[in-house]
Image 1 (tube, rainbow, N blue to C red):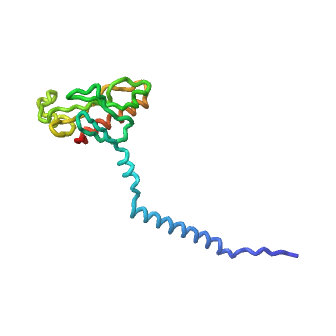
Image 2: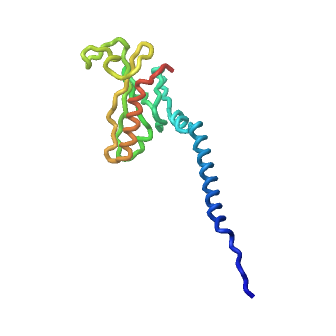
Image 3: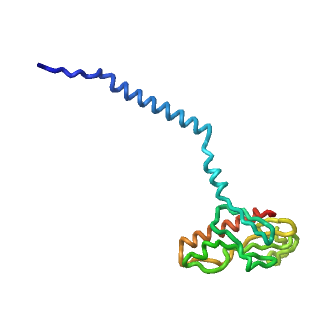
Amino acid sequence: MVTIKKQPPKYLKPLVITTVAVILGVSGWFIWQSQQKNPPQKAASVQKAEKKQLDITSWAVQLTLAHDTPDAAYDNKTASPVALNLTARFLNSETGCTDGAVAVLYRAPKDDPNPLAGGKKYSESEAGTTVGDFFYYVKPATQSCPGNKDSQARLETVRADYLLAATSIKKL
């Protein structure tokens, strides 16, 4: 006895492939359209969450740092009426890092001339902020990590955050 295998019609295979391709294409188009109407908001919310406030209670001001800098702090032991050392405590435990401040926060009476700028006021010669009767500005300090490239890169990021924060100082 001879058995005959029934084969599906020749047009069925291309029809199934075309149907699946159309379904995938239409689905992809609808997904793309919905994302164009409602773009993801994740990046903006992450950026806001990364900011850190550093309260300088002895001077009653606050710095807003661009990143969530680990252990951002200021050194009360070095406080004077005109300067305050800004630190990052995590750098104290890093191998190859010298002791010292990452940056220095300065304050001067808002109308005082800057002797290093030809008599211009500090607000005209430094990047900073006036809060109350004082002008606040930040300068880089001497701490470094010459023996550790990764730590030096982290230190430079923290230093840049402190320098940028000079324009965001506000009253506590």
